[in-house]
Image (cartoon, rainbow over all chains, first blue to last red; front, side, top):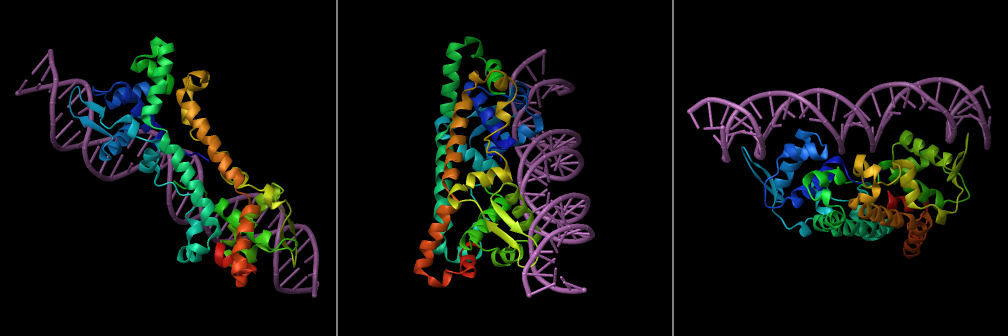
Length: 155
Length: 155
DNA sequence: TATAACTGATACTATATTTATATCAATTAG
DNA sequence: CTAATTGATATAAATATAGTATCAGTTATA
């Protein structure tokens, strides 16, 4: 059972790179090379994040992507929702009778509760938190204070 | 993002039916009809549960499946592991550098923590708990004290 | 102003996973 | 003997995930 797909995985790591380079544009190619991700695939992921206003882009030479949104307001939950759809424990259990009369569904309570817990956990892990953890690591290892160094950790 | 696949879903509901009829054999056909599951697919699920000693079977006329294990000792976590594999947040994040020097991986801690939380939640939801909730519902609605009634709730 | 480095958009292919079906042999109650 | 059942296994269909390719448009800069 794989909770995060590659798209979400790549999205998180790309955001961490953009977060470490806030204020300047980083090209898809640079991210792909540093993080060892398939270039075109990554581009699709980046474009999706633009559509969701997480990042902005600049075309042409010296162009690339830049983190716009506050990293603390980008939770892994949101990224999962963008790339994997809303977390739902089981669509099947809500069919038929269960759907037409939910109050009868004894399973529903447990399932909704877990869904809530899971969502909450993922919501609390933000890009901001991850970035700070990365920086704490970097303090101990100055060589990692570069995009290259970051890549060596997150790729 | 779908947390439970059909196999796990069918497994849970089949176990609830077997749990409600403990002591007697229930055929795959009966479960499939009552719970509206594809017959052969369900049979595969049941056989898998036999291999994991959750249920036993009897061949021939009047044969079927019976719950063997204590329902309180069958957690949804175990069912997920059987039908969907071990819960892992992201295989990708543990590759390469991250794998060769895990202590450097700042993402790892968060990810392991969530994995733990998720597993814990699913472990605590047992077939026994679900059965008792069903019975509580049945007390208020006597018509549901049959396999047919149960099906009207869980299918 | 030509060019190379970029993104936007989109179509396509490949691979893996999930879901479902089909078949045949063996067992068993009646 | 027969019909109802499971055991085992092969296969197909559907869907989701992962990855590739292409072309048009933009922009810094030589």
